[in-house]
Length: 101
Image (tube, rainbow, N blue to C red; front, side, top):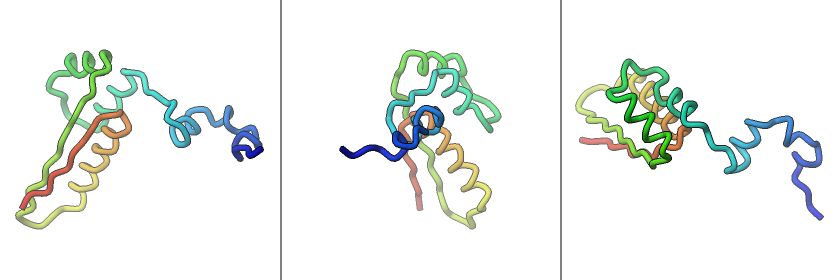
């Protein structure tokens, strides 16, 4: 009988959050955790109440980000945008990227 290495070492329970986040699909963030993750590093959210309602109701939220590349690209812009996209993905949002010419 095969055993998961983490079960053999009895680390599964002690890793808690990390184990659930990385090794299983069991982890589900609470709505307020998702809201804080989405809001992180932003100046404003146009309708915080609507976002909270959508997160509380379990509605699938979609986002998109578009880049129109007509000049030189600044590395900082790409890094900040991609870190925000990662926050959205971690919060369970469905996203699309558009690179326009």
